[in-house]
Structure formats: C-alpha cells, structure tokens
Image (cartoon, rainbow, N blue to C red):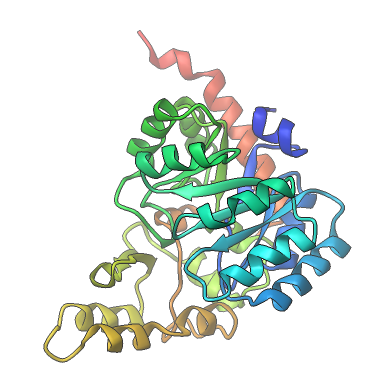
Length: 316
C-alpha cells in the first residue's frame, strides 16, 4: 500500500485524514477512522472546552490509535479548546477558518504537530514559517467552508511553494482522485464527504440518505456575501437562503446570519434535511453506499495503487 511521511510520522497505516466536520466528527467517527488505519479527527467547531474534553476522553476509550482535533479558529470557544488539547495530551491538531498563530508557541511546546487547512499559497507559506508540521491544501470542491481555488490548481502550487508535507483535500471520494492527489505532489489526503456514510458516523440517517441520493449538480455555494462561503446540497432552506442573499433590500447581513444559525445541527443531528443545511462536497454523487470506515479506506488506496500502477500507459 501507499506509504509516505504522513503515515510514517503520525503512526498511521494509511496517509489519510478524516475531515473535521462540525456536528459530524465526534468521538465515534474519529475513533472509527483511527481504528481503520487513518487519522480520525474530532471537530471542536461547536464545542466549549469541557464538551471537547468529554469527546476526547470518549475517543480514548474507543481507540488506542492516534487521533487528533480540528479547531475552527472563528469559534467563540477557540481559546478554551486550544488549552484543552494541550491538557488532554492531543498530539495532532488541524485548524481552519483563520490563522492559528496565537496558539502555535504553546502547541509546539506541548509537542503537538499542527497541520492547518489552507486555501492559498500565501497562507501555506505563513504556516510553514510559524512551524506547522504540514498543511492541508483544500480546494473549493469540498463541503462546508470553501475557498476560491480548486484542488487541481491549489495543490501543486502549494507543493511548489513550501518544503513541509502537503495533504490534498476537496473532491476526493475514489481511488482515481487519491491517485491524482499524489500525482500533484501531495503526500496524503483528507476525506470528508465519503466518511459521512461510514458506519461509525453518528449523523441522522436522513442526512446519509441525502448524500447517497445526490446528483452531480446538487451542491451549491452560499454565503459569499457574508465573506464565508459554504458548500451544501440544494434543498428548501438553501433555495430560500439563496434568494435572501441577493435581496439586499429586505435582508441585511444580520438577518442572513440568523437565517443560517443552527441549520447544520438540525440536519445532521435531527434529520431535518429540508429545513436544515446538508453540508457536502461536489463528490457526494460519487458516494454509493454506507460502509465501515475500514472498507472505505482500503477501497480508496487499493484503487489508487491500481491507477498509479497503470499511469504510464497514458504517456506516449
């Protein structure tokens, strides 16, 4: 199987991270992915310090494999959870939605490998200077908060710009896309949408079914007006929100913020996939069945090796 500095340095079987998806990536999913040979991540997006501590301790009961925590830096609890990962002995932290500079010294002193998600070359270079172990170059095909550049354009530019390892994310759901990521120079991948239908994922079945029924053009990006675009699957709520986003006369920014508040939770945890926000990447339509995390990972890398083994046949 494919092996790189990522699995070798982090104690994994495969160089794959599970995305830190808010209201999705709990102790069950993180431990399931880690037990399956990848790096499971607990999402701290909606957690205060004590809630995160509880999830970390649950994960420790479910796995003896390495797992990490994803910290969304725009969270009002970012300062709290930044301390909790140190106190709980977490050794791998990924970050998103901002610059983790204010926490880097304390994390590095604690022996934490910091791996920020970056949407641009400039931020990747800044993270390298701050002491990041690696960066996750995430293209706009991904679900949730997205940047402007696609994975195909972003990854090779980041690879060329930094000397630390680069992990590719966004638009990866099968072995061909894994192979493409490595061909672009990445040494690992991060997968989110496909893990939504892992057996170990505890989101509502209605959310999983929405992924399984998705078509290729079913995702859309909203929130650009507010400066933090998000990709999700079209539904009644999204269509209503799209109309409001372009109606500045009747909907100011504060009203838009309130419209979206809590919508991911009711979709992921309550199963209301009509009035809630179903975050998913453009590869949702490629996800065909619910299966254990181990089967997902093995399938990805087995098929990637088949593709890479035959890559030269296309070169004349």
